[in-house]
Length: 333
Ligand code: UT7
Image (tube, rainbow, N blue to C red; front, side):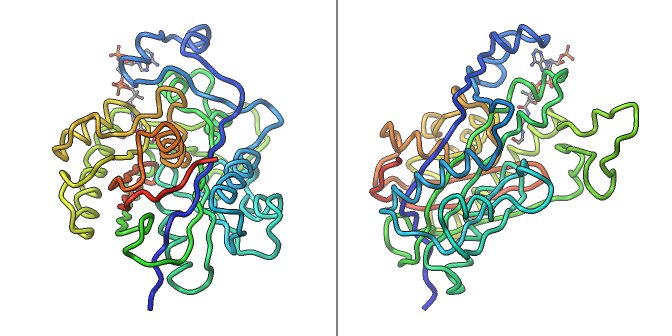
């Protein structure tokens, strides 16, 4: 019989350096008031030179393994679009630094939807009998690709990593992923993009240097699309689960902007206070945002064992995805 994927542990990591809105206002044409009102963000964490995505991924991954009881996974899925280097993938290094020898390890690049894509990949590895336990990590350091002169991206993104352990189990257990929905629309490729450094616009040492190595985002269009796609994806996954919006105890949306999260809750007909909020302290951490929000909510008791959860994400690609589960009795480390 096909095995379900059950969340059995959770861990997270953010860099030590805190960047406040006022610190950003010293070098960008922005204010603490604008950032709070238009995004809901108060602080974010950025890595220092010398640190990298893998450092956060290893810490979050090790905590998730410990939270799950310490048994090692046979596969590591790392959702990131800020790998330590373009080649090879970062997951094998993360696995080795976690002391995991010979395990399957690869990166998944679905930008801010990466963690939900990672959950779906882990579910598939378990269902196919390839692994009994899979470590799914979402880790990004978007600060490393920010244009220092762009105030719209500069204020929203933060760095971090969050991870869950998945183990093979039964569909009716707490923690079992009930249903997943994934989607993409490549006609929106240019809405969130780092244009240079790939095969189309190759890295070059030519002068003058180009800002095309920085992240570019069409904020307003992305805002509109993200609400529409997350609502549609939530509706699809709720239908597959056999739940109504009213059955959901906590909505755990990708933490891009408080106004986006409120709009998604409104359109699903859910009270806004059912949405878990973490972006006030970490900003938009891309693939790390859902597991970071979950870890904090579980630690603070906003998410409790037995709560029915609806996770939903939207990001560059464009990509989106949602998942449902009942939260198990686990503690973040
Ligand atoms: O994580 C993956 C997906 N990413 C997202 O979901 C992010 C989605 N987008 C957003 O969250 C919002 O679009 C932003 C927060 C990035 C921007 O908010 P907005 O309400 O869409 O503002 P806007 O870009 O339409 O700009 C409105 C005004 C403009 O000024 P004018 O033209 O009206 O005079 C901008 O130049 O706000 C200005 N503005 C700023 N002002 C102060 C844009 N960024 C800033 C800023 N500080 N940081």
